[in-house]
Image 1 (cartoon, rainbow, N blue to C red):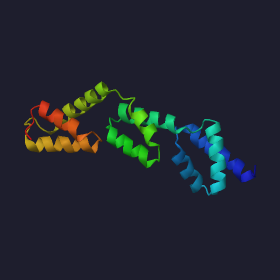
Image 2: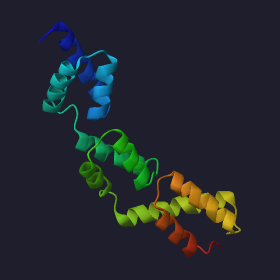
Image 3: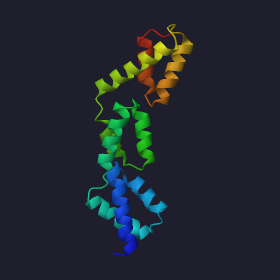
Image 4: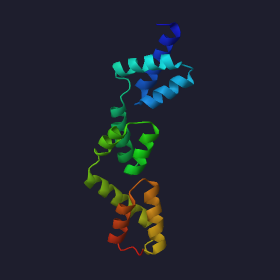
Amino acid sequence: MAKSTTSLLQRITAYCAESERCTHDAVAKLKSWGASPEEIDDLLQKLYAGKFIDDKRFANSFVSEKWNLDRWGKIKIANSLEAKMIDENIIQNSLDTISDEDYIQGLNELLLKKSKEISASKSPGDARRLLSFALSRGFEEELVMEWLEGQGFEM
């Protein structure tokens, strides 16, 4: 192995070891360091073999973090993973780790908190603001509309 490839391997393994990374992240970093396509392929094989990168593990970690810590909805999470070129099946399997009950409860808590911040009038304007807020967080419109109707918001 050439000296530059050895150096790149050390750098990329350190990069992948410091935080969960996906293939897309590793390739982008290697390109930024000037690695050739052949070197990238070779290094990726070594990273997979050493379990430094695993897109399935990355997606599970990403979903867990974005759901549990940031309260992102499934649409926003899926779009973010798609942007990192994660396979559709991996994305869906990772999203399935969020239970429907937990998801609805999380949406409920988020919207209750936000509704207290904006107003107690339950007017159509408040409903639009809550809908816009929930959509920006990546929640499904149907679920938000059901919640708004259930809470007695005027539409």
